[in-house]
Length: 187
Image (cartoon, rainbow, N blue to C red; front, side, top):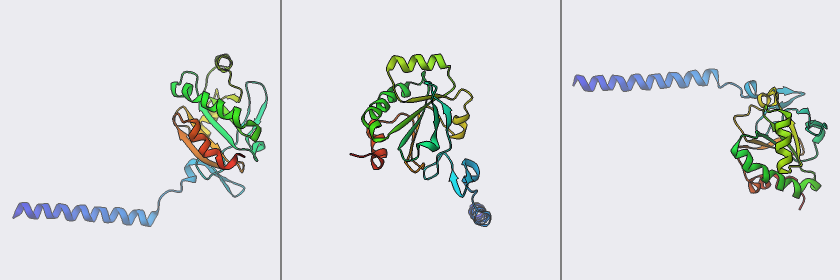
């Protein structure tokens, strides 16, 4: 009997604790995600998340050309975070190149953001494999932090309106990328 009363009191205590936790959560609410992942700029949510405006990229490519993500509005954009030592990145890069060759005339832009490696290392690697899309260096990992990259490769699909529509964590395939891009490509 004592054992049963003890078990009953444990169940009641657990139920009361859960009810208090739910009441506290309802009363205070959850934190607003945009307070942690982005910011409101001119009334729009800018964050590295689906349905948010992609954070600005203003960098110089390996070819010494200026990339301004805002100037690419009107075009679908793939932003890919990668490194030469990353095995999944090595598997994914030919898929990106294939897509670029097929759809660059339809306006597809690819920005490959290298994560902290030297210019010579990246340049040699890009030339060795013949990649022709835009490559930028993020040696101070500013974009890495801005996009809250969780690991390489990470790929963001940005609509012609500048909105992130898909995020791929880890290696992805040409087919998956094409499915994500299809609403923005002709033919």
